[in-house]
Length: 146
Image 1 (cartoon, helix red, strand yellow):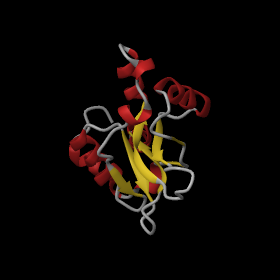
Image 2 (cartoon, helix red, strand yellow):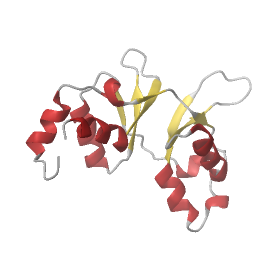
Image 3 (cartoon, rainbow, N blue to C red):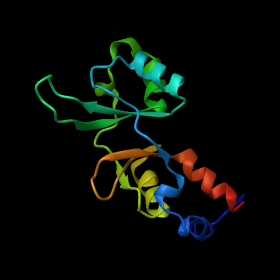
Image 4 (cartoon, rainbow, N blue to C red):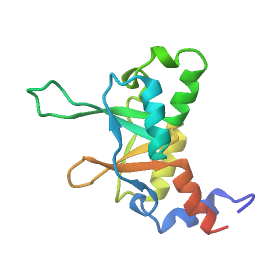
């Protein structure tokens, strides 16, 4: 699709929703997880983003979605301060989210508007995380129309 127009790209994404392209599942860590450990999680699980949840204290059963650390956050931190940073300090906030039933074109526009390489995907009924949508996931959909 070399030299594709925005209209051609829109047509490619038109019949798809986020659930068609996203990576299912939630891999997470706590805000105090060292960034080097987050990098290790990414390598071991072969993912490009890790959710950051605040699990509260032992008596508190609530879980709060904090943010999302991407491989690009790891690369940026690796330059100077990887060992001094935690997931909570590096997580993308405010978190850019979509629902699994949202149109893929809408998600792509959100990524472009927010300069985000990953979006948190929430279940439309519960607003709980169910996966991640990356620029590579969208590229995979677009490549089919090439």
